[in-house]
Length: 99
Figure 1 (cartoon, rainbow, N blue to C red):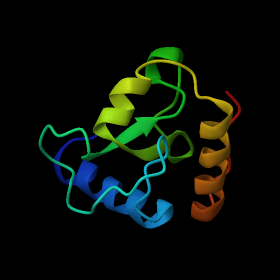
Figure 2 (cartoon, rainbow, N blue to C red; figure 1 turned 180 degrees about the vertical axis):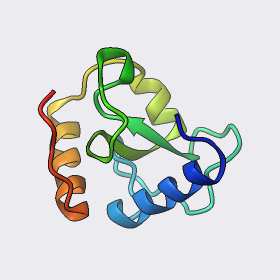
Figure 3 (cartoon, one colour; figure 1 turned 90 degrees about the vertical axis):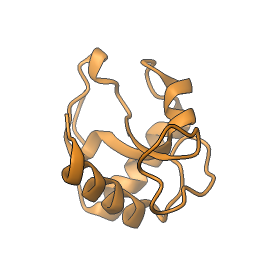
C-alpha cells in the first residue's frame, strides 16, 4: 500500500490520465485534494478490490472521490467501471490484466 509522497505522485498521475474525472461518478476531482476526510477528495480505487484478489498495479487503479470509493467498497466493478478502466489504461498505455 502506497503512503506519503508515492501516494501523492500516483494521485497526480491518475489526474493526468483521467483528466481529473472520478471514475465512479464522472464528476471533477479537484487537484490538490488528496488529503483530509472530505467525500470529494481524490483517492485511488482498486477496480477489482484487493480483498477479491485485485492487484496493486496500474492496470487495476483509477482516480475516484473518497465518497464514491467508500460507496463502492469491496464489490466487483460494474460494466461501466470496466469500460472506464479500459479507457484509462489505453490512455496510459497499460495492458489490461486478466482477473
